[in-house]
Structures are given as structure tokens and as C-alpha cells.
Amino acid sequence: MRQLIAGNWKMHGLSAQLAEIEAIGAARPTNCDILICPPATLIARAVERAKGLVPIGAQDCHAEASGAFTGDVSAEMLVDAGAVAVIVGHSERRQFHAESDAAVAQKARAAWRAGLLTIVCVGETQAERDDGRMLEVVARQIAASLPDGATVQNTTIAYEPVWAIGTGRTPTAAQIAEMHGHIRKLLIDRFATGRTMRILYGGSVKPSNANEILGIADVDGALVGGASLKAADFLAIAAAAAPP
Image (tube, rainbow, N blue to C red):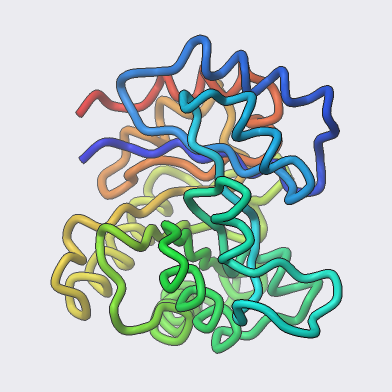
């Protein structure tokens, strides 16, 4: 399968940063698939600037299609703005907005309803890893956050150890391989297309470690945070992806 390099801009980016998306499009890699998820305020303009060369996604959606939910954005609104994908269940949403596994599952269903590729995030905290519960925690998140009906066409999993996000720390290759192998088995056991569903690694991915991370078994791409804000860094990570 083609690896996917997805950029999560988080709460970064004003109009001036749209030039980075143009630069990514101008040097669009052919060895992998790419995706950029800017803040909601930039999605429509990012789609225009990308000129079809860079698929644009979103960072979250509400479970309902419309309603009295001030400040929220529905999956249908994202599609209307030109988005083709959405991230749900990122650890920062789980932590700072108290999103439960059940809430993440509702958002995943909403994204499917609107026709968006859904990147469902899972991952353990440092305390959970120190306690040796990381496999158990991620298995629970997969079971409860990922609804029945997930397929290779509508769903991608992103494993992001919470302790590695934005910290500059990354797990060892053996730790990543163990978790991705664990997730792969969970997907195969539950879904008909589990063997070919993409599993991305996220957590302090940068040009200096991308080659090692993207070469690990069952790592089907990366969900990139800070390094996706600069076209040069994002393209360097994409260049490390294995050719299909």
C-alpha cells in the first residue's frame, strides 16, 4: 500500500501560511499520499491554494450534521468547505475537551456519513506505559473508538503515544513495531479489510527520524505535527516514505 504522510497543523496558521501548502503542491511527492489538516478557518482557502495538488483535511468534527452547537463544525460543513478527511480522537481533544471513546466513535460515524476519510487516533500516556498497560489501553481505545463498519476506504488509524507528542521524544523502533503489530492484529481480528487498513505513527516525527520510523513493519505513514508547518520539513518526511 502507499504510505500516507498527513500533516496536523493544530491551532497554528494564518493566511500567510497558506504559501506552505502551495509549496508542498509545487513539489508534490509521487512516492506516497499526502494530506494537510489546517485549522478550520483556513480549510476553504487551503483547498483553493492547493489547486487539487494537496488534499485538505480537518482536525475535528461534531457528531451531528447541524444544530444548536455554537462554535462546532459538522462533517457536512467540512465537506462543503472542500475537506476530504478529518482527524478524530486526537489525544489533545481527549485530554483538553474530555472526549471519551464513545464520543470519538460518534464523530467517526459522522465523518463516514459525510464521506470523509477518518483518521482515528489512539495512544497511551507515559503513566500507562510505565505501568505496562499500553497494549491494553490501545486495545480498549480501538474497541470503543472505532465503530463497526470501518474499512480500508473510510478509516485510517493513527497511533500517537501521548508522551511523544510535541515533546521531541520518540519511542524506540522496537516499541513502535510492537504497538503497530498489536494494532494490526486487532484490526485483522475485527474487520474484513483490517490487513490493509493504514496505521500511521505520530509523535515528534521529523526529517531526522522519518526514514527509520517509516521503515518499521506495519507503519503505513505518519501523522506529523510541528514539522508539517514548513513545506521543506514536510516534504523531507514525505521523501522518506517507501515507494509503493
